[in-house]
Image (cartoon, rainbow, N blue to C red; front, top):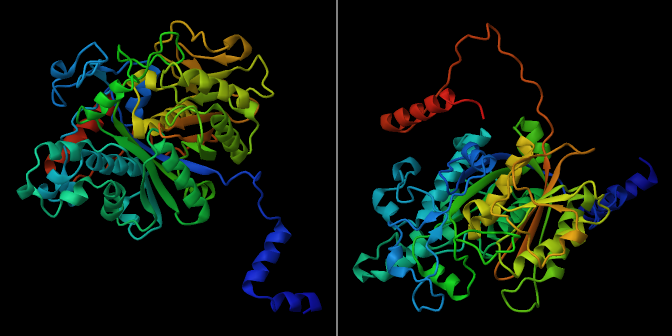
Length: 506
């Protein structure tokens, strides 16, 4: 052993680790973060969306999924008044709603019917969509028991608790009352049901909650706290209070449509839904042979800080978070060809967001390669805590299908935005996404009403290896194995597969 080797061997473990970091070159703030693979998707959104396939059909076909408030939520005729100053009234009749929020199979998750009654439907919906995400990823839930799988959930509304308080009866308080509506149990219950032992938390940063949850999930994966992460957001509109508040601050569009970046923009419409993605370190996903839907290259979060008001967006802070996310991804700003904008359709927020995007992503961009911008809020409204995951999954699917969906309700561009100085394209119809010299890159933005902002950078996945043809003739029968907890559920599942297999290819 040389003298130098002997001296190194005698160092403490901490000093040896520091020496190794110096030898390799410690990571700097400009070093790209380790890529994260998106290996599974699950979602329930307005317009009958019950998974990524139906979500893509809605996006591809440019569906407007806004409806009047269903009678099982509240009596809209009793609350509606076109006068925005009418006390106790709302000047909108519209929203983006999902069906069957009262339906749930508690025994499937080992929950008793008595406990299920106390569960916030947001918890129930999250359980279902998370399970579907694992199925989509090909990850058997029973193999995750005891693993370092993290759960990161964006959630902000508590309508179910408010409804229970309206008819409050102290005699009805039982052992499930707290865990049924306390926000932390949305994540904790999912970890408990699946037996997961990674971090488990609910994130509440208002409208940016879901994207902040994904950012934190990526950090957990890179730090080694988690080896798999389930991240997303959930939002249900069960009582009228939040809509009444939104009408008081004049943030609602009178016609119930998000006319993002349009001259008629006068606010947003509330929507609901749930989305969850399964995330792994890219190296682990490649090792495990997972299907890659897209790659998350980088992300960043910050707060608006001091602005014109608590709920007023800050252009400088938006620029900073986009710039930090691009730097985290290790890509050139001009290489990003599409951005899924926060895009609520408010007269103040839209111009600020477009200017912030162009100030960062317009640098070095050729006029022949415009930045395409869209917002899924034009399809089914602002999903609040789940808004970011709706835009995130939309962008993943757009990358996968190499098509940018239409941006709806655009008649005349907002005159308060200097469009002539920016090469920005707003797609009025579904547009093919040509392959650039490198991979396709996209950004996703989400801004919270309380000032918390997030931006993520996505890259399309490399093409999968050509599948190996099974032995035997091409027309030979293929076994499709199905399983369910009850005979009735098995029959329903078989019927769904029969309909799927009979449908023409998308």
